[in-house]
Image (cartoon, rainbow, N blue to C red):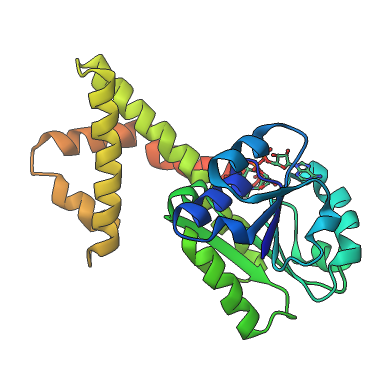
Length: 255
Ligand SMILES: NC(=O)C1=CN([C@@H]2O[C@H](COP(=O)(O)OP(=O)(O)OC[C@H]3O[C@@H](n4cnc5c(N)ncnc54)[C@H](O)[C@@H]3O)[C@@H](O)[C@H]2O)C=CC1
Ligand SMILES: O=C(O)[C@@H]1CCC=N1
């Protein structure tokens, strides 16, 4: 059995991704928060819902999906049942040092998933404490693999990886929304405008993944000489698109 504490946006997305992609819901135990959200998710997905962290005593690994405000109290409650367990926290400020200090008898890791885990297309960065064996890392991969890619990085890179992959779904959604607004401005109906923008983002991502060319060269393939695309690219540069994206990442990184 595997466990979750906190099933909000990211905890719920990982649980959904696991179950929708074939992980047995009967093997998942969730301790949710005070809202009815987890109950609604449980009715939809069929995992086991418990009321107390102590009820996760026989569960391993345990994933923590609570926010920073709830982390300390959760770790305090978890301590007495954490001996030799694998504890993986998604919480932004759950550094390995903090987790290690709060749960000295556990094997801890800090991971930053992104919301596409919900459809098995996630990109999750993870830093393990040195206590994790290769076998235990494989165990985590065998679970998180249901939700997409899992990439191990040193903790010095986990924050920026979490921004580039974890915050950016919101940035891309904003781009898709803006693109469809422009389509509507020029006469497309809203549904067709969204379908076109989303279909483009999906197709371009697939092409970037499968092509030998980097995104810069792929852009060059779209910009016919004297054509409409290069005029649009010039306008994006004029309005600081590239700089706006870099500044967005700087801001998310707290700069
Ligand atoms: N939303 C995202 O895309 C990502 C979020 N994160 C990090 O994950 C953390 C949570 O973020 P969200 O899921 O967006 O927030 P959220 O507010 O949607 O989810 C937090 C959940 O924890 C529950 N909770 C609070 N106290 C609890 C307790 N004692 N026991 C069980 N459940 C409890 C709440 O009821 C809520 O459902 C944050 O630190 C965030 O930085 C990390 C990667 C991606
Ligand atoms: O906004 C946040 O704090 C989290 C971190 C990555 C995505 N969402």
